[in-house]
Length: 137
Figure 1: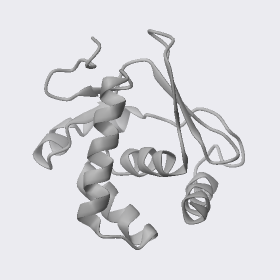
Figure 2: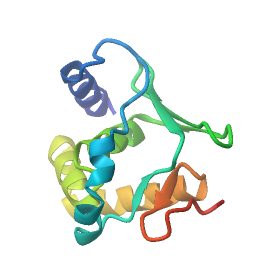
Figure 3: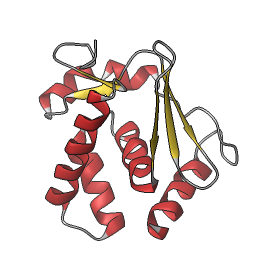
Figure 4: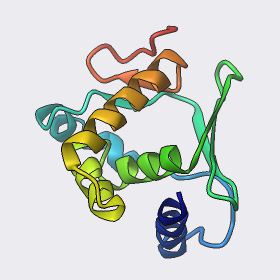
């Protein structure tokens, strides 16, 4: 867990909003890479209106501006969310980055990340790229 917090802090320090908790940009550019995402096997992306906030302790909170639902994540969830954003929501490269940081097998991290995304999908925080709707939708 400590390595996750250190990695999260280093990523946030390199971002324009460093030193502050607040929205983590879901970025228009990430959405423009939809073709690449599908080609590389990524299936999920943030649902419309979902805001992400990282607290100083490294925990991620997701809040749907549409439904008002909230979802909290621990440090590993925060690290996965940030890695997915950095890699255009492509699971493979994001998992490979975290596997290196966590000194774990990349395929195990990918499996864990995919299961976590499916959990977020059930919670309505991410949508399936193929259908464009959250599971609750």
